[in-house]
Length: 178
Image (cartoon, rainbow, N blue to C red; front, side, top):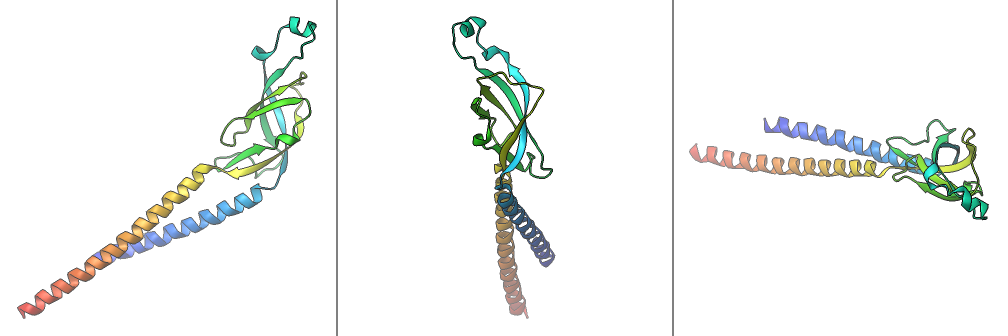
């Protein structure tokens, strides 16, 4: 019975080690391929009318600022925002009329831009470069799998030592009765 249990732990360890290897190879590959800049476009979702100044300020010669909610869209079918990959926009590829840019955290495709001119919301902002990175929770999954593997291997070693010890004690007890 204990040898069967030992075999099961060995099989589970092999499966988990294989899973870790696949995860690591996939993660490294995605990091290398994701570092290449790709081209997409910004879709202006909504103008934020609350931040736009009054008409009186424009009359006095004060520059107006327009805030818009944006979303990046992609020409690439694979390297885009997903559960595994986060997208990060290259701020140098934004047009000159964009004063500031804020991207939501964690590689989200959403963000806000502030512009000194009014943007036509029916047309996208073209030629925006971005990169993708593996999200941090993937690394956490890999670490958890590594901990489970180490625990299973330690459990296997401890059980093997205990079985060996019990066999020795039982054999000694049987020999002393004979």
